[in-house]
Image (tube, rainbow over all chains, first blue to last red; front, side):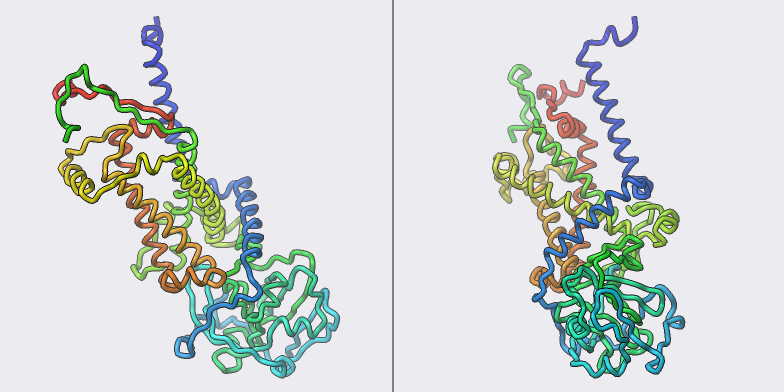
Length: 246
Length: 235
């Protein structure tokens, strides 16, 4: 006779339940403690990426083309703004107005390149807004320059397309949705804190989009293109959410 | 204190804890979502702490992949995966919580089990608990438990709302303003998390002390032995 034969049934059930409970608990605890391992699983990665695509759509839905980012007083502007790139400030591209040309490509009617002076000659907008980094830090800055939406209209961009993409002198790239590109506060910031924007902040201009996280604000832009093919971007290709709206 | 009065064994009643399947499912989905939010949140915190405490959560407690594997897979140092977890689990947490609130109100679970909760009963049960004289009876919550459940519910709501306000400081700027602006909302979000973690420590410790509550939350039902005088029960 084995033990199980002499035990009344409810006791066995009780033991089995307890065993099952202990196993589920330890399995749960294990998977949580080694959550790092789950993350790097291919299937988990594809679910996470799928959720990120869903979040792109949710954020596009939340975005309003007439809701403005909060603005701040001159006294709140940080002049010694944080330098931020994936390389040290000494390696920041040093572009000069004589050689620089802004190239246009894709679904744009007039693809003639632009000089720095031409960009400065366009009607200028000024804003004091909060730059929010995906890491969590934020800073209030003052940026000025032509509206990207005005510029795209002027060069005959196909505004029924899906994406505006940017390529930068440092190898960086990024892309945004057309509604965000046409938002009145999305500007080609040729000035920072009322001065010509210095090299470390993106000379000759940084695309300033206060309705998006900092990494969606490319610096040292050399090419603007319009496309229907999803262009991705430097950090987006590395797992950051593409829409990244604020 | 009728609970503590010795009762003739014949009159003693069993305490029964019942949890319907819907509540158990929502409880465990919530538990998982909260743990994912905390684990990934800790890693996000580490990249730029909201508090100037010079403290970082140990990497092995955070969620977002092995750093070297992340680097090899994504050419990125581990923040992206934590963010993907955080903004993925956020939907699970919120949808599940909304369902829980609706079911809790409609079914009368909140009214029946979490109310009433009078300050006097809370003080009485709190002092009893501090002297380790508070009976834990299956199936009915004492006043301290009720306060704890309302408290953690409030903490979860504040953490979700402050989280939304730092996720969308432009589109939901009214909410960000309500939490004292972007920077302060991050601090609120942190302390909301801390309150939830504090609850979890007590919640899990008590579940370990009274394992039948855990049995009930897994299998739907648990009952205690008939209440006997203490001496008899200890035999």
